[in-house]
Length: 425
Image (cartoon, rainbow, N blue to C red; front, side, top):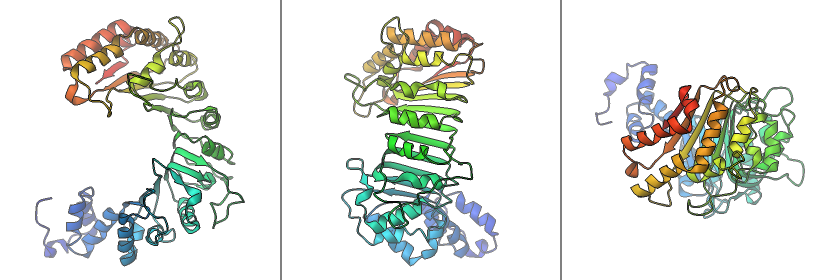
């Protein structure tokens, strides 16, 4: 925003609704918000709301201390905070008083979205937190108005408090180790150990990975949440996670499998996907199926054990014949690699690998035959293959068009004729 601030004699006669609209137009511009806050009290109230609607800080770090100073000076700011991103770094002490000034459950009356991220290298060990900090965090996490909760890289936490939330709509648990307390939970040592018994869970979206124990805890609730959207990270997917997720599968309409690379493309890229993660039959209402993976993981998905045995993916989709309501299937394939700078010639080799490798072609054709059956997959409206290529080494549009045209005409002609296959790059 380059123009000068509005004159006070003009802004003082504007209705508050119009002032709020003007301020909100610059809600993503922190500097503009600070400037607008200087106009007068009517303007500063809305800018405070925008500036403090979302706060991020590291436990015990300088930004935590600074936020504490601001909140203690202006206590009314607490009520504007709706989203909190709390990070843990093992370098910082958890015994500083500033933490308790920021994490004040009684004053944080409007918070609806909380993310807690542990230290990626050492995780956040809940049992080592000061008792007062555990109490404050549990009280914050158990707020009845919470609609979104994210836990990442946290160990030794009792997640049973999630089961009592009547408003939670989005839940993410990744690398979370659930541990029961040595004695029944109390307000001072843990969350209330109660579950929903009379109201249906409101959870709509569940994103999980490496959290079998936590899912088992939620599974044991009196009312098991039935999300519509389920996202699963394939890393460390095991029998325990599979058994738990089957309990959450009744209403799933959108299912996304996220498979992150575990090595470079010239060596081992990870173990084959657990058979349970491809068990699509357990989702009776499945409409959208998405695979978000790297080219290396695509080979694990499409390669069968032998030339005569279909790939795991083809086998599992074949099981859905005539008993499905699939409308969309998406393959999102990332060729980029942050650890390697590809040259144009290497990208061309990777694309040839993608479109023309014998085992890939065989698997794509098998999918074409299965999904091309209009009687078995009568609701199917689109099959999309998204290819992400680094912009600086991407082939010309003409080269890509040639690859795609040949692929659609010779490898997947049935879906092409049905006009539901799309290759996007």
